[in-house]
Length: 349
Image (cartoon, rainbow, N blue to C red; front, side, top):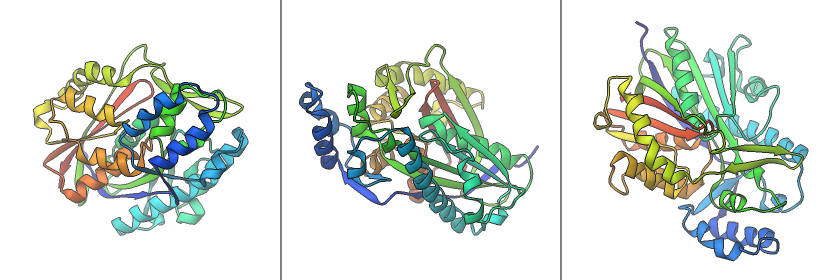
């Protein structure tokens, strides 16, 4: 039996342009107010989102000008690469490694198109070896942090001593649109931000946690729950179902099944480390798992400080959880397009 993968480090990076939720309300009012008669009635969405601030890859004025797909993706290529390298370097430094020590790189993003992919563009800056394996993941959205972690752990465990770097980068703000405003666009403006996170995993050895299990569950006939639409303006958010009721009804049975495949039950988990889609999603998860209200404290803190950054968000939460001290067993969990739940089970070292 191969030794389980160990987590050696986790690190985060945020872009430079920070804006408060009040800034977001003012900008949204200027953009949506004249063309969306119900905008003022939707202001409570901003106040109830659980977000105090978020960081953006571009200055606010950039978003208030008409932008098509070429402009947005050009901004993605530059901003995502900088964040990729910042998060990756911090993770390597914490692990006491250099880019040349990495055997495989898993990069996760769903908010822009990069071909060659981000890890290829970072090769020279990071000093990665020319024979390092490159595994880019696209389209897993908010589940990408957990999905990427599971894949990186599988790669690391396949060979003793293998070093795998996982980097998740999302620039959700680039999907902010000025055309045909909808309720979904306003909700997105209230919750989404930009960020990156990275982990280094090793096949065996010492780390702050061991990966002891992983599982996924995709619900049938749920392709319309969330995703992107693509048109000449760029990416547009698709959210066609109310997620909190779906989470309350469906997530617990799926989690019980995923844990059961590892010989575990809900009561065997000391801490859930969950992607916070929004304040109401956090409450729905607590309700579904029978947790006390307020249990998912790191989730609320990260949402408040950074907004929903899609795939990196759950790694931001993992970073806070391990700094506070991981319990014996925790489960990293995230929901994303598909509609899919992805989990990774950790044992504190």
